[in-house]
Length: 288
Image 1: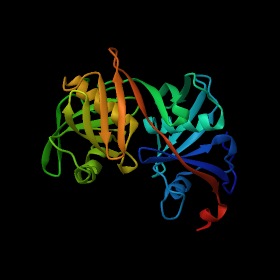
Image 2: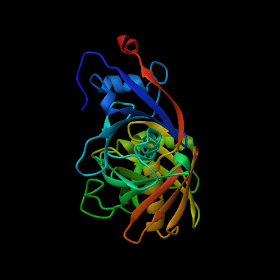
Image 3: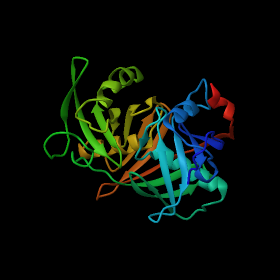
């Protein structure tokens, strides 16, 4: 339980997953209210600790071994993060709270199963089933699978597929991808009115039957070096379109994540995690 007081005092544990960095805040040690302005300040890379987001946990839950909440650097809360789940799993491993056996984490985007390998340096997460259906993602319009639809951005028509693995994704198929395109087109697609909860955006190039390359614009974050849930969505779309097999390596600027897609569209993700540092946030930071 997060206790509400006038100040905030908390230890942080910083990890990155292929360059996508999060701060883990142990919910039992947080004193004070974790408000959106404070989240924005903590994540600020000039005035705060700096991060792509905050993981608050472990939380008590009757639906899994551990509960977890996710916060973007803009202060908004979101449903699920593949990289965040791998980082949280490594944090639990470092604390001695988990061993090699699988364990479950309950998120606002559903329950997942996690396994830690190689002394915490690689983590596998069973992310649940992907869906392409508009009612589940969600996407406005008639009930349908959102496959190969047009979206106009900056006067140019692009083709996209939408998917959810507990959070919304828009995958745009391209002959080539670049970080520049992601930065130019990503904000418009993220906030397109057809996505009532906004959306994460992946620009995807299919390399061969077992590899795709993506550039990512993440909802509430911006341009991102890597994303676990984005990798799941991109691999699933490539497989759904018949362009890739069920085992897909998703290559990003920060590195690669291995995705396995089962016959029922359940997604398994495996990728690296690195510990960066730990410390205590000073109350002085919030006095500016």
